[in-house]
Image (cartoon, rainbow, N blue to C red; front, side, top):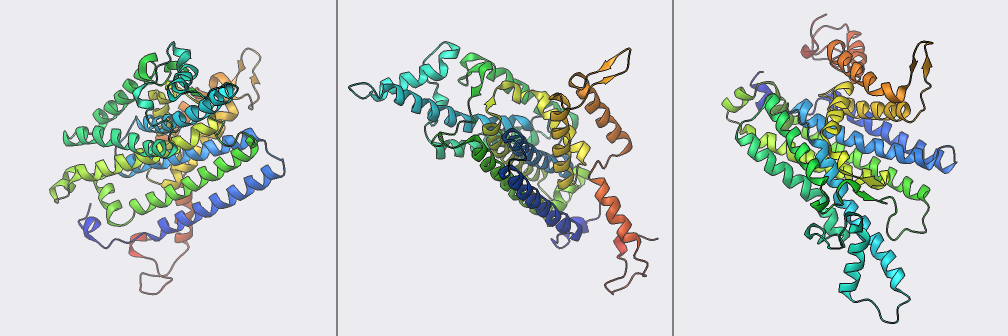
Length: 414
């Protein structure tokens, strides 16, 4: 790693600028196409929701790529931030919807309900499933949409900030840090499984697809709105991370990934850079979760289980870590294939002595794919674009020189 990597001018490599523009253009075309097909009735509302959820997962994968592919932190707990964002917005959705139902039931009373009666009725509706009507303290701001939207950012961000500060200041790295992030996720999911966690235990939060104030709006319209919101979040998140990993900031992050000790020797506060990447990606992942679960309609502690974060790492690896577009492609491809195989879309194969049922064999196929990519194609699906780019460069036969058509020194010799 040359010192110029850290001290040179903060320029954005042309290939990265090009890939960003291509990705955003492809995303815009995709959104327009899906919208037109949905408006024409050629794709169902459930398909639109599936595509919207897939875009949210792609945003989480891009965030994971920044913290793993660029900074070298294999976090096996990022889906915990995804779930916390979902819980934060889900609390308001459940509260507002339940409040509307309770008020409608009490409308026939001669006297309007007191605030205490209204609170008790809402508590019974929401928490009766776990045998109580008491409203936990963590629901203090559930009545306020702006405050809960703030929680979507603050809760994952503060958890990542505290956890990262404790881990990085102790210089925990490598597999030990991965184990710690997985332990954090496991502890959080086990806590949420308890009925006294304040989030309805194993029942989770349900009915999130019913948006308060839009009871008369069709699910088809709501699904398109969330699909557009998910696409906008992915586009903005991609732009944000493309800026983060470019220039001097990106150079330092990659240097930390490649040789942390040398970067520290050069005078950089490595822990600050790692904490910045870890916290920022956690916040964006929480936002992705807040957009995902209103489309899914339900969230429970299983969504935060460690296996979900492992899936996220697998998507990034298959797509190609160290490439933002690769992470997004990996999440989109694997997510859609997973839905196709597990929902019965893939036909079973009858071998005579044994019948392959893809609903049972999908995880095996995914695991084999991950192993094959790791061994034979470490650059993942995103590496295909590098091959195409290298092929275009190989056609430039001019000698090194100042003219526009000449090969650049960094392209190497013939």
